[in-house]
Length: 324
Image (cartoon, rainbow, N blue to C red; front, side, top):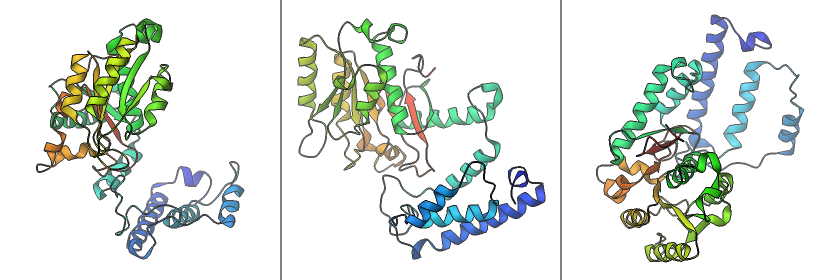
C-alpha cells in the first residue's frame, strides 16, 4: 500500500498489513537470541539511504516498515535480548506492548476530561494505586509524564510554589533570596537543567557529598542548609534519590525528610528507578521513609517494565497549583 491507501486503508487492507506486521515482529522475537545485544555502528550507506527519504516522497508502507524493523534489529541496544542485563531500562512486558497498541489505536486526548473520561479515570486510578502503595495519604494526586525528568521538574515547581505562593505570578523575586535545592552528587544531574528551566539558575543546586556507600551524606546536607540560611538563601527542596543512575543506591529517606520538615522545605523522592521496589513484599523495606515525601517520581518504563516513556509523579499535596 502507498499514498492514501496506506494512511486510510479499508478494513480488508488494514487486516492484511496488520497481520503481516504482527508476523514480522514475531519473527524479530524469534531472532532475539541470535542477534548481538549491543548496537551495531550505522553504515554510511544506511545513513545516505535515510537522507534520501524526503517529505514529499511517497513510499509503499510494507517495505518501509520492514526497512525500519531491519534497522532497529541491529541499530539499537536489544533490551529484549536474553543476555541484556541492564535493569535501568528493562525489556517491557508483553502486557505493556499490548497496552501501547491499544492506546495507539484509540489515541485518547486526555487533556480535557469530557474528551476521554475512561482514559482519565484509568490514569488517575493507576496514580492513586501507586501513591497508596507508597504510603502517601488518601487524597494524593499526580499524573503520568513523558519520563522522570518531566516528573522531577514538576516537583521543583511544586516546591517553589509551596514555599512562595506568589512564585507562579511574580517569579523568583518574591523569595527575597536565592532559592536553593539539595541533591546528592550521585543524583541524576538533570537537576541542573531543571533549576535553569524554573528560573532559579543552575547555581541554585547544591550537590551534596555522599558517604562511602554512595548515599547522600546527611551531615553534609545539614551543614549546607545551615550555611545557606546564614548567607540569606531560601532553602526550598531536598531531593533523596531512590536508585541512583550509576549504582542504584538509595539515599537515607527518613533523615532527609526530618531535615525538610525542620526547615519548612519540600521533600521529594526521585524513585524513578528504585520506586518499583514498593511492589516487592520482601524488598519494600528499603524504601522506608518514602511515605513521608511531599512528592515522588516513579518511572513505569524502568523496573515496572512498561514501554517508553512512562514517568509518573505522585504528590501528597494535590492542591498545589501545578498538578491540580
